[in-house]
Amino acid sequence: LKMTFNKIHRINRGEIGMIIVLQDVTKEQKLEQIRKDFVANVSHELRTPLTTIKSYLEALEDGAVEDIELSHRFIKVASHETDRMIRLVSDLLHLSHLDDQQTKPNKTLVSVKEMIEDVIDRFSFQSKQRSIDLSSHLPEYLPTVELDRDQIDQVLDNLISNALKYTKEGGEIIVSARLKHHDLIIEVVDTGIGISKKHLSRLFERFYRVDKARSREMGGTGLGLAIAKEIVKAHDGDIMIESEVDKGTRVIVTIPVSK
Ligand code: ADP
Image (cartoon, rainbow, N blue to C red; front, side, top):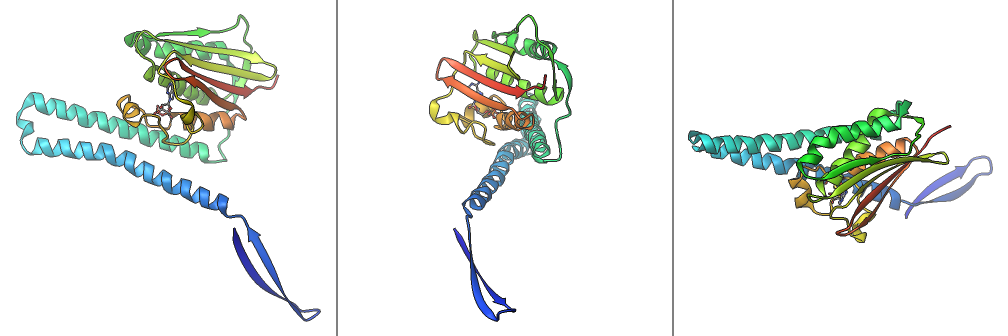
């Protein structure tokens, strides 16, 4: 709590008074802490791949370049780390664009059926590679709805790529969509490693990961769910996660649609 004293002088009656302003600064302090944590996280996330690249370049400089096979391997690592940084910076730019209140979703009439079938197609190669059965579950009739197709595609991409990252070979992923009253409900369900209860409430925070090493290894930036949440929020919708360790995860996106 911050207390401010303001002396006032009421000229007409010649009195001197005092105003005490009580202001709740807990929110301000929390925001400041979030901002500081964010900067620290970004710096750390960029520093890690940079340090790796630097050490591989040094090794090449120190002679590894003479060994063709070794230098190919080192260049591959450096290139892989560069890709990660590009992904991270793109995700950050995307988030900052979404943070800008001026940018509203660019809504058009979209066929949900087509949108889901397209995203399944986009991931069919990757899912086959990992022997994961990816399919859709759609009702006979699904009307067209107004939404920002590019943005919702991004949400679906993030959710399905997570399902793929955190599901073992032989698992299953089902993407479903349905209309309930005035809401479009999209679900991505996997039979993956699951998430324990204590993490569930923090998953949408920027850079929050259950297992940092695993996420990095799978190429994650820790921003996928934060981006999905911002996009769904911009559509006045909601995103929730239900999960059970070793059983799987269900992400539920609800978007109100005007009929
Ligand atoms: P990342 O790039 O690390 O995947 P996200 O923001 O997309 O970042 O997800 C945050 C964390 O939530 C992940 O690091 C992972 O621990 C957990 N997570 C997300 N989706 C799933 C899922 N389908 N199954 C298990 N864990 C998940």
